[in-house]
Image (tube, rainbow, N blue to C red):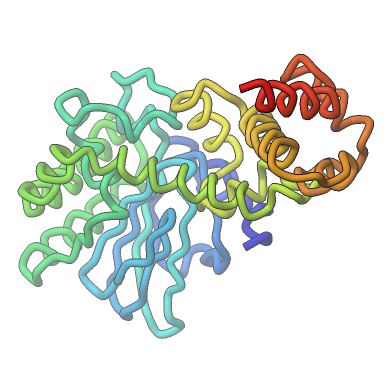
Length: 305
């Protein structure tokens, strides 16, 4: 899990021939074979070769006739088999949603009545977009039309490519309208966010005694990028990661001080502080008293009751 803290994030210029829209098959660029994120949207279409996709904290089937819709900054990997084939579309947020001035980290919170084209992207971790042969044939024809347009860029081509992209998203959204609308009514994206924060909390709890506890490792444990975790914590708790960890360490320290006779130095270590003096200084800053005085005062108060 610690290796996920070093997962790369790619920009369009690193994985695409153009900055707005790019479509290719497996022969035009070597596929990524390790978990990664990117700053742009992506759609992958499985043309042959059953596999799975790892997206966020989920692992879902990805057989032939399946499409994958990946939001910016979402951790993912689709390990395509050697004999398989796929089509991939990368595109910038402004290409799909020129009317939506939204931070890409907030895209999962955009209401579908404001941007219905986001539906398959928002709920990819909860739903498999596997088409029947007739619908998939329509998708393949659409992909070939977009590839030809992309090869012969001219005035008006970008508009036609955007229309093709919207047609592709609309085709899938129409076929999966009922489960998409159900997921939207259940606020599934918020449930996924709660699950991610629960993984962060569990990671902090398990590593609270480690002075080397970092935002990167906690983000990796929750299948998030460090930037997205920072954004999520500010939005949902109003705190930074460091503030959250310090609060939990101080609460744990209070518990040890009130319910044990352990030395202050030992409590400092159990709460993730390698240096007793630093622990005492932080405890006094947050609790108003040094730890020894806090312990004596609280015990005297208990004795008087």
